[in-house]
Amino acid sequence: MSGLNWQKSSLCGSGDSCVHVAASPAGIHITESADPRGTILTTTPDAFRVLLHSLKGEPRRASEALALEVTTAGDDDTVRLHAPGAPAVTTDRRRWDAFVQGVRAGEFDHFTA
Image (cartoon, rainbow, N blue to C red; front, top):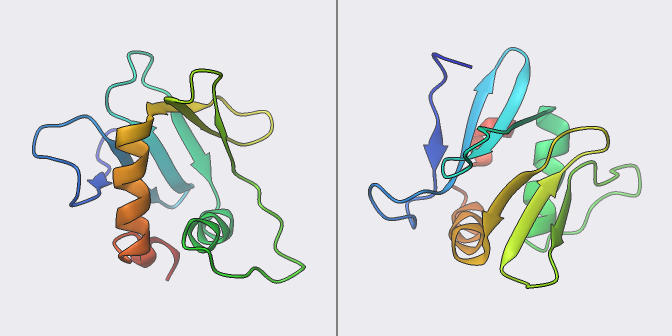
């Protein structure tokens, strides 16, 4: 996935590991820069748009299934973003919260325009 322009939330400190998002003709790519495996989850712009609406607390149309799922581990500090049959992007609560705050501020809306 070289050559992609990765974006993180402005609420993630400079140099900090964070959830990153990029776009290519193949879809929307999501990763966690601290992930030693370098897991990249690729999804469609529509699935990413539904995720953004969900994280913003906006209602979805009945036809919009949530293709990306967010789960927390038993320790409640580990957050996983995954899709059926795809590897999970794993982050911690602080980084996830910075991503969600960026989502709510509209920082990632252009990925679905």
